Length: 221
Ligand SMILES: [Mg+2]
Image 1: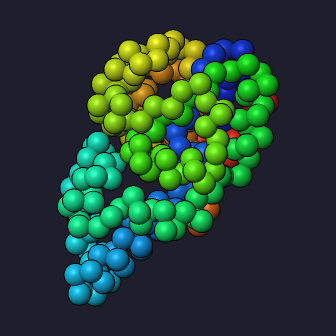
Image 2: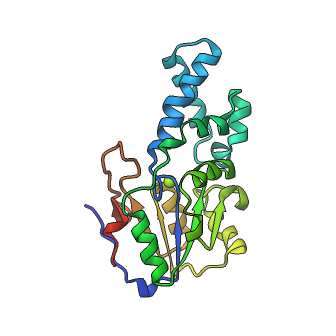
Image 3: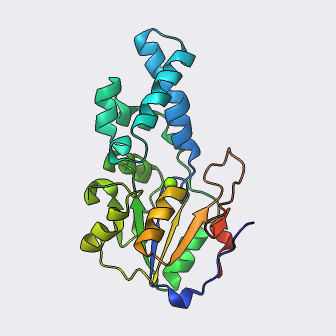
């Protein structure tokens, strides 16, 4: 059963918005890690694409949901590839998701405070913001690297208070990753929204645990 968001904007002061898969099309990241990096790695090491992909997917999985996973410098060293440069090579795939800009405009007009809260590495953030300049919408942009742990860890939400004090009952947080939403819930963030269509190339997949929307057009106005 799909859970629809049920709140009014009067209950909300701050919006915490994830970047990849929430504001931006996650197809960029999926293509990058699952296609472009394996291709490049295969060429560099003189192996075939399938073997490269198998090795890489196992390597990714070993650090999933940790800060290491998001650390571009770690990957550059571990894989021997210039990861930030490779990201730039395909930056034409960085796209804002449908309904995001009207939603951000609407929230600004309502006087809400917007924050971008991302696990992305500062270098990955820079590649994306160079391409789609939406920095101006946000009072602050926080990378997990600044906090010291990934959003999947409950501790993240507590540490975040030091960088940006917030009332967990009057803040709404939107993210496409259920494990991140679970940790925010455990910390006590009251209003949570799951993004059910993070990638333009994948089918919509609603959460059964959180209010779930395919696009921001489905939130109350
Ligand atoms: Mg995301």
